[in-house]
Amino acid sequence: MKEDLKKKEEQVEFVYETPADLKAGIETATYKNGNQIKRFKISGDREVIVRELIGRDMMNVQKIIDGDEDKYMVAIMHFATKIDGKSIPMEDFEKLKGKDFNKINIQVSSLNF
Image (cartoon, rainbow, N blue to C red; front, side):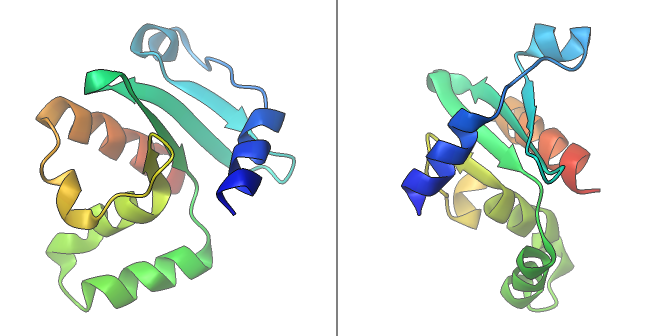
């Protein structure tokens, strides 16, 4: 499955949508179905891929947070984000530097809200 995702990512063309994205190093790719992903770096030269979620993902978010709305955004970040090709646990987002957390949060929000 990881190989399939990597192949998909390689088949799309990443572009900088705006001058601000160029300055921030945020690239966007659009799949044939219209879904988008964002690619950028955070501290430690780690590569982040953020994707648009689908309904099933949002249902899983609701299951994970079990009514605790304080966990809502981190759960969405968990499902939408891969760092260096790997999903990370929700609690690990809390350990990121603030600037990295915010950069991921903004890109997840831009694709999913």
